[in-house]
Amino acid sequence: MKKGCLIVVLICVLLALAAGGAAVLAAKQAGFFAAPQISHTTLVTPKNRLSVILNPASAVDALLPVLPADFSAGPVTVDPRKWVASFLPYEVALLATPNLTTGKIEATVFVNEKRGGPMLVNMSRQNPLPEVPGVTFAPEGLELPTRGNLQLRATMPIPESVEAVIAENWKQTTSTEPLLPEGTHHLELILDNRNGDLLTFASALVNANGGNWDELFAENSQQFMPFLPGTHDVRIGLSLVDLDSAKGQLRIDATAESGGGLAFVLGMGWAFAIGEAKTRYGLEITGEPKWVEEKEAIIADFEIKGLEPHLRKLTENR
Image (cartoon, rainbow, N blue to C red; front, side):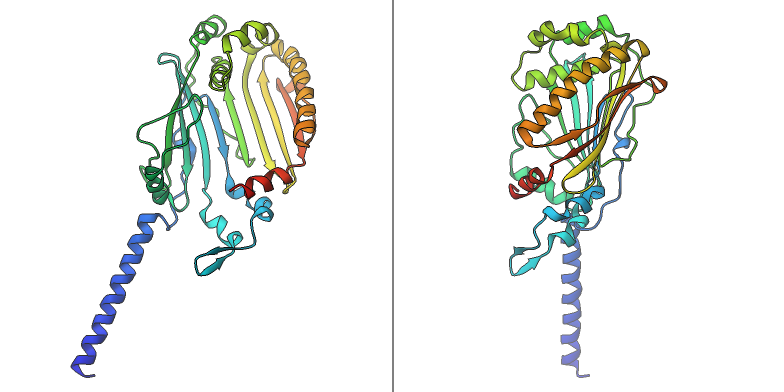
């Protein structure tokens, strides 16, 4: 091979290596390589009182029909159904801890991103976070301490009157172990009420949405306060069966003294909620809560039908 040809070949090889290295670096910076799986439980402490956990990958098969068959991405056409599983997070969780000393609920949104985490952080820095009533986001905004560990921290004020009600009705204890999810549903909610924090979250949400917690509590507390101190925890699990239906379970662990009365009050509210779901949203809900004495829990195995139009509407609005 002539010397000139050899030089050209070497230059081409070097350019190819440089281009490949640049592409790999760009992919790393954008987060296109898969991040490690990290459980939300690594962030949970014994003080945690509310956990909402979503496992997107487990619901992919049921949701595929709502995705478009293809969409244009510049000069190419992409089938999102082939790519969605590659970019969906492994897990998404909301973790919340009430702090009566500061008068605030301290919350963390955790996303175990699979791909695109660094890119999302950069995008969030260029665009302000959406305003959420009653919520103050941490000034750091969206953070990514390590790949797979995307976090957004926020606080929400607790009404001042709540602390006295909790002190009067609950003996405060330090939990040695936080309540953890079963991991058997697409979506799980766990609320630990051993220290009365159902009131904490309810009051904060009422005021954040423009209500008046003090008035609401004064008018309605006699209906639920006889049973609430004996309520240990609330768990809700929900899984999509297909695009139109889902199955779930509500479980409320309580003392025998509180369980029966709580089941009666809950039953009335449940019947009202089913009627509203049918009238307002066209949803059919079957199943009802019952006190199961041997388990010391109120349990409702339920099914929801009529979800498809709502899921399709959510997709169309994206």
